[in-house]
Amino acid sequence: MRVWDVSIRNPVFISMIMLALVVLGVGIRALTAAFSRQRVYDALWMPVSTILMAIIATQAISWRLRHGGPQWSGRTLVKQPEPARRKG
Image 1 (spheres, rainbow, N blue to C red):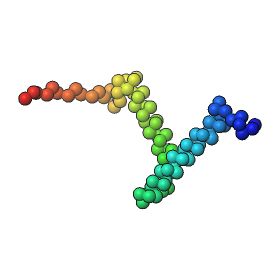
Image 2: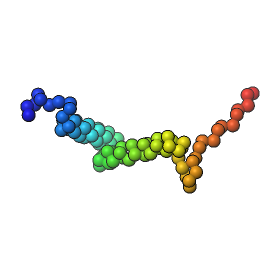
Image 3: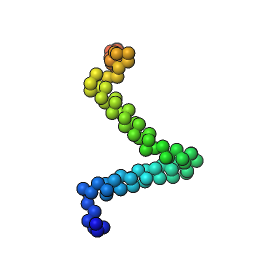
Image 4: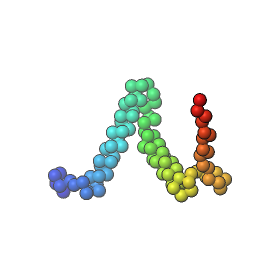
């Protein structure tokens, strides 16, 4: 395969782009941690935390669509309506 034959439809090329974006994100996070005198190695956990937050958000959307909200002890928790405000 020649260099100029790389296509957007090539799964290896797409994987390389995705890996480059992850490395770039972790690198920028590590750089900002170094400049702000935080722990630089915490930047390595950023992809894991991103995946976990995506799972949590997906679960919240799923609960909202299937049950109308989160459930606790078999009951759906719904937001209570706010009481009417008096004008004055």
